[in-house]
Every structure is written in C-alpha cells, then in structure tokens.
Image 1 (cartoon, helix red, strand yellow):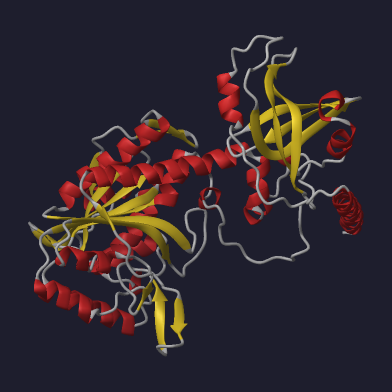
Image 2 (tube, one colour; image 1 turned 45 degrees about the horizontal axis):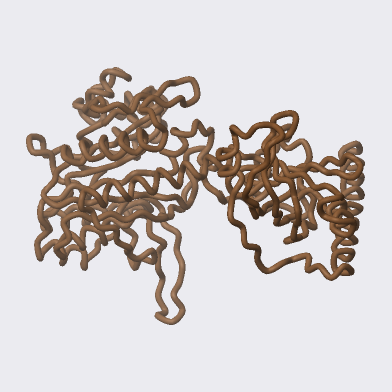
Amino acid sequence: MGDNMEQETKYQEELSGLLKNRLEKMEFLKSKGINPFAYSYKKNADSTYLLEKYKSLEQGQESEEEYNIAGRIILKRGHGKAIFAHLQDGEGKIQIYVKFDNVGAEKFEIFEKIDIGDFIGARGKIFKTKTGEITLKVQDFTFLTKSLYPLPEKWHGLQDIELRYRHRYVDLIVNPDVKNLFKLRSKMISHFRKYLEEKGFLEVETPILHVLQGGAAAKPFKTYHNALNMPLFLRIAPELYLKRLIVGGFEKVFELGRVFRNEGMSVKHNPEYTMIEIYQAYADYEDIMKLTEDLISDSVKTVFGKLKIKYKDFELDFTPPWKRIKLADALKDFAGIDISQPLEMLRKLAIERGVDEANSLGEGKLINELYDRFVEPHLIQPTFIIDYPIETSPLAKKKRDDPKLVERFELIVAGMELANAFSELNDPIDQRKRFEKQMELKKAGDEEAESLDEDYLRALEYGMPPTGGLGIGIDRLIMLLTDSHSIRDVLLFPHMRPIDSKKQF
C-alpha cells in the first residue's frame, strides 16, 4: 500500500512537471507571434497516398510536386541541425525531415520545442532515405495545435484495459489497430445500407422516445417530458413503428440506430447498442432467413475479402446456406431434453440441471432458459434455431402446422445470438389476446413483458400484409468479425462506471 502511494505521488510530481513545461512552450509560441491553436490548414495529401504513390521512388530522387500534409507528431529524434519525426494523420503515418538550412533558424528553433502530441502542417517534397523510408523534406511548416497533456509511454505494455475504454481518444491516437477496427465497423454498416437500398429497401427514422414499452422483451430506461407532463421510455426496439409503416403502404423498410435496455452489462451486453431492423411485406421467416444469409455473407465478403473469419480458437465460415435446427431438436441433441413432456416433469428436470427458478417460470420461458444454458453456447458456426414456444414470442405468427410454436428464428454464431426474426403477426384479434396475456405477466411482476399498445392494434385493424421482420445486433457481429473479446472493444465510447477524475494515464 505504501509503495503504491509513493509511486502515485512520484507520478503526479512528474506529470505536474511535464504539464508546466508544455505550458511554458505554449507561451514561447505566443511570444513568437504564433497562435498555439490555429484555425485551419489547407492540406492536399495524406500519408497513405504518398507512401503508395512513391513506394518505387529511387534513392537520390525527389518528387517534382510539393505536398501539404498535416497531423500529430508522434515520434521525434534529432541529429544536430536536422530532425526526423513521424507525423500521424487520419490514414496512417509518414516520416518528415526538418533541416536547419531548409527552414531557417527561427523555424528550426520552434520545431526543436515541438512536443510529442503537437499538431503541425508541413510543406515539402518527397524523397527516400538511405534506409529506404519514404519521407517528406520539409520546406516550411505551420504550428497548428499545442498538446498540453503528454501521451502515455509504452502504451502496448499497459494492462489497464478499462483506461483504454474510458479514454478512447488516447487509445485511437496510439493504437492504429483500434482505429482500423472502427473503420471496418463503418464499412460493414455502409455496406448493409448499400445492399438493402439496392434491393429496394427504404431507410426510415422512427421515434426513440416511446409512450409505451414494446417491441421486445427487455427492461426499459424511463424518462420524463416536462412540457407534456408525461413519462416516456427510451426505445427497446423500433419494431412496432416500422410495422405501422408496412400498414401505411411501404413494402420494404429498415432502420439502423440505437436501442436502449436497462439490464446487466457483460462482454456481450451494453445498455445502449446499435441494431438494424428490416421489414418486408409479402415475406415470411423463410424469406427472411435467405435475406439474412445473403446480407451478412455479402457484407463479410465485400469488407473482409473472405467468408472464413478467425474468432478466438474458431474459424467461422459464413458461406451460405447455414445450418437450420428446430429448437426442440437442438435441446434433444445437445442436452438430451425432451420439451414435449409435461410441464411439471420439465420443471423437475430443469431443477436437477441447476435451473433453481424453474418453478416460477412458465413453459415458454423455461424452455428458453434451458436452451440458453445448454444449447446456445455450443453453436459455433452460423446456425438458425427455428420454431419457438408461442409464450416467448407475442409478436410472431403461429407456426402453420403447430399452434404451440411460432415462426421465429434466431441466428447464433460462436455461442451468441446475432439476429432475431419472425413471420410477423398481423391478425389484430390474436395480437390483442397476446398483449392481454403480456399484461397479466406485467401485473405479476414481469418487467420485460410487452405493453398493450392500442394504437398499434388499430393499425393492424386497418390491415397489414403478410410480413417478415428481422433484427440484427451490429455490435456483436462486429465483435465476431474483428476477433474482439468484449462488446466494449467495438463501441467507441462504452458505458463505464464513473471513477476518480484524477486517475489518468
């Protein structure tokens, strides 16, 4: 304990000295008439472009063109009247060479005082060093931003992953792989949009503030609208609004956005996350299974250039078609559980298997609990689990040949649910009965039960064509495709418990 306090005191003293030194350098810049926080800079090239264009440049040759580049200084080493530095921009990094004879005494003195983390704009021609490194020979530079806080040293040796999440801006500066991950995420989302739009889907936006809790089985976040003097919920799903649009005459719609669930946090769960929901008129869950396969496999192939992706110790193969297993068959195959047996016997079996709350669960929720525990973790390759108990799916159509089940599937990959889809229930009479059953569960204390939405029922009474619907969790999908351990790795700013503001790098 004493050693830790002594180290912390020493660290704070060193940090205080560094901060003071940087403030003094800022004042030095001002004394030279330089604004340490410039307004703009006109750049005409980035590091990646220059490295690619001049990769075949011979030693001793120099580009005919001059270039203006800009970025953050992340490495600097001096050799008398010459200084080499690495400048990092939005695409990568490139070496720059600052020589006393080229920039003059005053500018060279300023460059000598530049700290790691400062931003500059530099103008010059490209040449190749004796060691073969593509380099910008600086003819002039402009100071752009003074960095007052030092970047962490030996970043890759740090073990405090939470600090990387809390200070993502620093993580992005010093970890190029992290920045690349979020570029891949953006490309996946962009391709999802492109694919759906080419198939005739329309992207729409629906409310995030809901009057009623609905669209999924989850606990909501509550808020309050002062002007209207009424409680509201942050949406747990956009489903019911999107199906209203199908009623209104749109035949193919999708929405990509944030949803909010007031539940636990884990490597697979964050209280707000990104989901895409897709609805297609005149389709059922078989059609939506095909759409899911095609959408994901095409996006993976386009963005990653392959369909086989490494995740942990597995090689995931997204080549369609994907395996399909009925939920009842999966429980038999993986757990030896026959869900057709009487409920009391099923409860007894569940308790023997460690499901202590079995007696308080209805048949549908009990089956789901058994499936979650004993089947889902074993499903590694992309697999559709189909045909769920009706009790767990109040918004899905009954299965044509078995009214105890509904036409629903979940896509499971690497033991995680990535997607959930139905043949959407469009019978307003049946839907009302299901909502009423949900209200009974809510009164009994089930915080995840659906609300009875009269306006949605009215919409169904006007008539909704046969419809298939799908929801895909974007964050989990990106987790798998980038071999990330936690959902927090693929969220730029994951939710974290507040800590002492003094704790820094």
